[in-house]
Every structure is written in C-alpha cells, then in structure tokens.
Image (cartoon, rainbow, N blue to C red):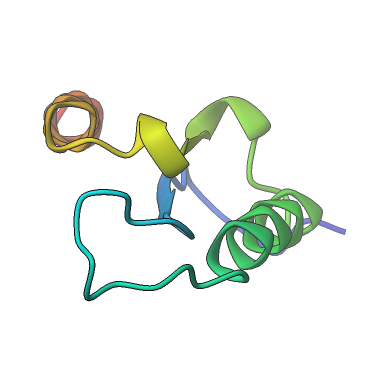
Length: 77
C-alpha cells in the first residue's frame, strides 16, 4: 500500500562522531536512526532513488549545500 502521493524527496543527514570538536562527544544513535528513517520512508512508498543519505564523513558543508541545490532544482521544475 502506497500512502505517498506525488514525488517526495528526502535528504537525511546524520553524524555520530564529531571529530573536529572536543565538546561534541560521540552520539552513537544518529546514523542508526537515519538508516531506520530511510527504511521507514521506503516502506511508505518513497522511491529509494529520491532519498539521499549523508552520513558521518559524507555530511560535509559542501555535500549538504550541493544536495540542497540539487533538491531545489528538482522541486522547482
């Protein structure tokens, strides 16, 4: 059963370990939660190709900015 109508996009960002800041301790659950969210979105009928995960070291400022720009282009067509 699909309960999603239209196209839904998701940018899922999660970081457990902030290596650059001593004040930020390892979280330990953000990446797992992000993966669980992705699976939940897929189970709701969102196409896996419309979900972009940026996890841990892939969640850089540049990568997030790039993905947001690409997402903006997709939704304004």
